[in-house]
Length: 230
Image (cartoon, rainbow, N blue to C red):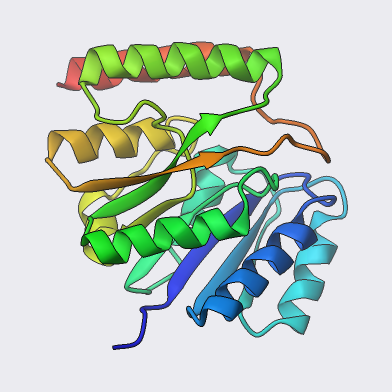
């Protein structure tokens, strides 16, 4: 039986320096493994040359589709803009910062299929981040584990891949950085089967992280709202 096509959304905000390397790496890895892949590259209101690179890749590669947002829709909004254009049986998203190797994305896909999981994701066991990203991650993971008893120690880890019925069941709506915790909290509450693959995150070499100190407050406010909803 042939492997199901993976429709993978990659949101891009000012990632001109990374988008081609990320795209080429994924195409090479999945072609070599003979796993069908569709890449949905979302230019999330970029101010640099990201859109031009996406447009060129969409012309050159049959597996690449471009989604173009004139205004930045937020982290979650960029992801949802791509995910909601796909009708694939397996779909997911990852970042466009080239910190996760294409081979690791393929490993996550294999775990989803082989384990019969509802969703599968990367779990970063080694990271090289700036201090702001490290603080945000520590605050988020500690608070989320304590409040919601999720089973992952890296709830933000990507890629996150889903079976179609899982994505439709979860139906996430967060347009900001709360998209990842929204998904993980809902999956834990509904007892969905989660598979994780340990990966080593590579340091960002081009572009800058979009996570800032204000993200901590955003996380905490959204977590408090989710807790109150019960």
